[in-house]
Length: 66
Image 1 (cartoon, rainbow, N blue to C red):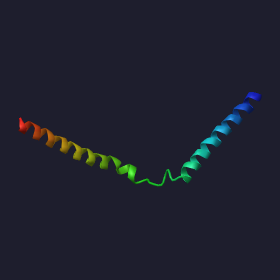
Image 2 (cartoon, helix red, strand yellow):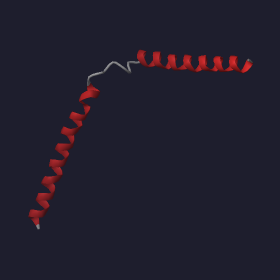
Image 3 (cartoon, one colour):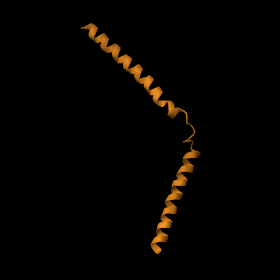
Image 4 (cartoon, rainbow, N blue to C red):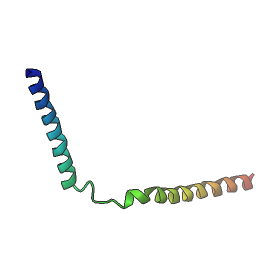
């Protein structure tokens, strides 16, 4: 029976620490921007296209020089 009290105490301590971490993250603004993550992949794709086009022109210039 005493083991049950220890387990209940430990679970309440762990649950309280998770609740405190959640409240701390809300107060620090962790969940304020909910729009950007949904479009981040679109923005990264445009950046990658620009990088790929720059490398393609370098390769074309090198092959034309030979």
